[in-house]
Length: 164
Length: 339
Length: 116
Image (cartoon, rainbow over all chains, first blue to last red; front, side):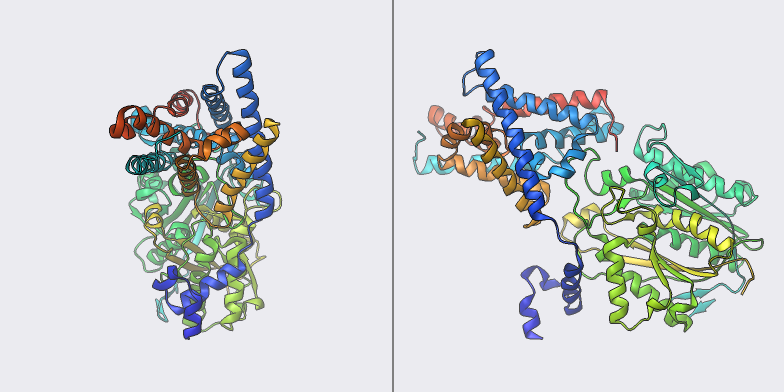
């Protein structure tokens, strides 16, 4: 009995013995996720999107007189636009099922999360539906990024680390 | 008539006078495509939202079932229905259109048999002459409410299931010709600690097994009493788990045909449905079209339909709760050569 | 050369995301939040800017760069205006991305419907 309870994780403390055994049994019957295949796909699609980003950066620097520092702004905006268009045509989610993190990790994923939420809640009106739900998925990213930046700023301030 | 601890025996043999099913394009492309009464070419049905489209499907199925039973909606005494939407709005609004005294139930994906059992019981006990049991679900409205916006690019794991877009309705009557509802077993909540809403099959399998075992126990019968025992939507993962659980509990389920509606409604090799079908409509559209046809033709004599439901909410999941599940079983016999 | 590194490093960050999703079983929201915080911490440690010089879009396109931009803004204002700069500067650099996402998503919702 004791050996079995040692095997269970902390998360399962609230479950009974039978439930824990069932959980392990169900886990063994679960078709495994194709991790390697998914990682390979994510690598290629994600790398490709970053490549497109690099091409856009070069284009903005050489043709539109942006500097290397400021070129990332229009680059990100263009990628977001492409992402929004693909989402509107119902294509983005199909690509994403194949590419996994390859489409969700780049800024395209951020744009897709906002656009898909906005589209979905159109039926509830522009104010409550679109306006009220647009950040449903993207909100956590913005909140945690901001809070993290705040604490890092405080740490820099306290330890006078200066910055460059 | 109460039988055993949690089962009913319908001694007056209420008849399923008519059934109807309405589905979306993906279901039309499945193996049972030509068995459905209405197959739509898109999932919006010219409505303004997924939720309104779902309500339309339900109204279509209910109206057609009543028509096929040779009745009008004014003659139906009670309408019992439920769906996945918050506050079961699809059914409330359909009931408004139908104008039939309405009993709303929530059983998630077990609603089809929950409502059929209640309708049969009302008729058998003489509390209604005609009763309608109906349910519906819609892939997009379910994704919107329970998971992610439909255009969101998240990768679904292989254990995920695809909610059936469809509606199924049955008219139960005291007399007439048709398959007969003979028994029902009301399930208990079974929660085995599964938390993953993308693996409903594993969460629901124990509930299905619990209800089937209760049914066999209450009626003192063995699995081979039925030509077919079919679960609602355990799909690939849950069905395999259920088979193993029966073996562990020494229930000889292999003596009969044991199948699952979630595996019957789609072709898992050709359609993008991961582990198989789910949703209230999954068991309803398969039972009220394909299985009814086989019963009427005498190809199946006695079947047990066990609809399975996962009673979680998006909030309960976010609060770290596990998924409580339930299964309701209804035994239907062929009207041909009444046994 | 930068093109090759953009592809490789960008791909690698996506693989990290995929591992968080498939192995650590985090939801997409948890995964993205984690990556943003990693980006923020990396910039706090002064590691992100050298990466940008080396891999270009490979690190400015993934969501980690959002964390980097937030910290950049905060620290730049901290230098210029002291303590209060931490709060006033956070969104300075990132406004292009957020504004574009809001505006385009809103216009999309006005014109298009979801396809299910």
